[in-house]
Image (tube, rainbow, N blue to C red; front, side, top):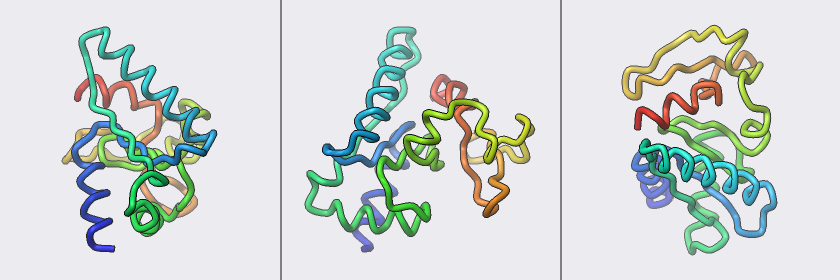
Length: 143
């Protein structure tokens, strides 16, 4: 799993938006459509951001990477979406739109991370930090 960890963490680190996906998953297709359209929109405005898609079912190490993502995010489902090295979650989070009630309570933010300058909310259920989509646009335009 060390190779899977290294590869996944490298992909997450090197891209403003990283999607771990499967080609047969309709939720993945929906999320990829939304985020690639947003990437094209911002590229046309002159503020491009990096987006990469790793198709787990097409890669020999896909199962290992998916196992590692479960350790990292406590979720094994796809898509697994990362924005600026923070987990956004999957399609449900993407579709909810801002604000996410479980990650950005009343739009009050509890923390600003030094490494990315991204504002985060705290998930009340388990204390993990998740990025909320209300800040997604600010993140990708600063990239």
